[in-house]
Image (cartoon, rainbow, N blue to C red; front, side, top):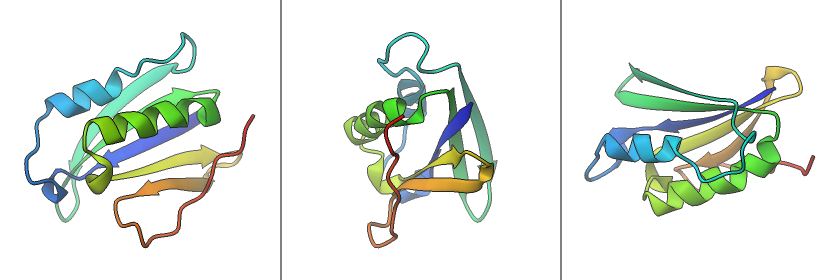
Length: 109
């Protein structure tokens, strides 16, 4: 099992609505792509919202998550990561709101 995590930082958006988090959680993906969705809110030098998708197919799920980030206008306020074969010890950074930060690619299953 892998975890695909999207952290949204509302302060990076001109306007923020909690509804976008609900929409992000409702991906249009085939049954079985997402085993669970967990939402955690916190504050660490500003508010953040972590949306974590539990999946056995992160490389198949990521394109849908990435598309949803763009549709919702969250790409400028989000970071996306995915756990690797050793959990968080070898995670991948899939998206960063700062385009200068290098990101990783998910390989096909």
